[in-house]
Amino acid sequence: MEIKRVSCPKCGIVLDVSNNKNEVVKRFACPQCESHLMVRFNPPLYEKLHVKCPNCSTELRVHNRKNMPYRQFHCPTCQKELRISFIKPAE
Ligand SMILES: [Zn+2]
Ligand SMILES: [Zn+2]
Image (cartoon, rainbow, N blue to C red; front, side):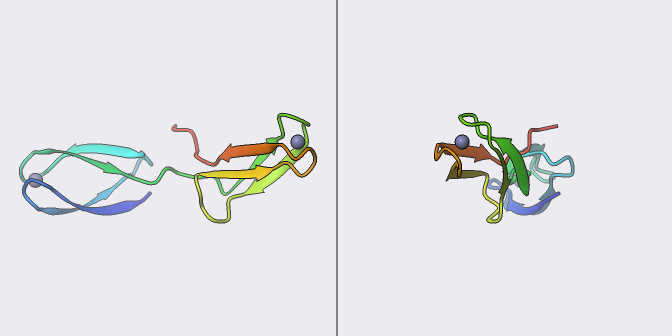
């Protein structure tokens, strides 16, 4: 869960919004002026993934040390460029 502090662009009230269901986008109504608001959260990411190179089938363990949603690297066996998404699928 992540908490973001946002202010309503219409009435200026400051709100702490949490994504208690780990949603990436949360829509809600401002409690003061009832404007429709939308907050974006960082998507939940895998810390590491076990993947198979689609070219040579080498099994690779990829760590997400920088907490990035994507990582591009070369397969150590066949040198093919691979792109991995660390974004967890929505539940
Ligand atoms: Zn408001
Ligand atoms: Zn490979």
